[in-house]
Length: 138
Image (cartoon, rainbow, N blue to C red; front, side, top):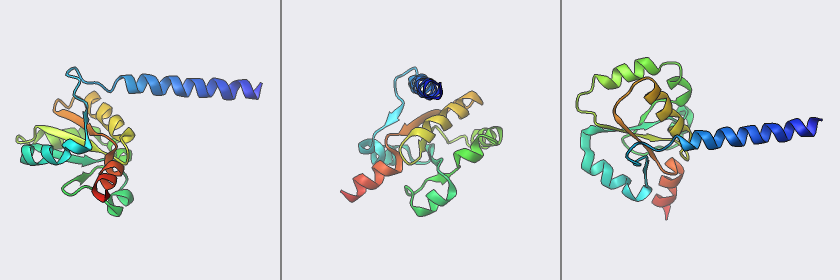
């Protein structure tokens, strides 16, 4: 019986993960920013782009993409209204690029911010800081 519940739980987790990933596309189909496009986006967007790193503070201190601001996902969930209010005070802000280690927490942060009513364009850096470090090193 315990084996049945383990299998059931795995199927449930897998199904939830698939449903969650299915919600990752925006109406325009413009959800991801590739590592190759990162530098171009930063240069072309100027102050209209916010690089928001949603990793924990200790991860951010260990290394981050230059110019990014740290807003840990663990704190975002409890302070979403305040973060959205702050972002809404920046008239020059046009887009947020969400960053984490790979892209899972960034996807979740996007869902949280959108649910709170943030209407800015939000995209996720594909493979996050892991991909950035890999590309930088090689």
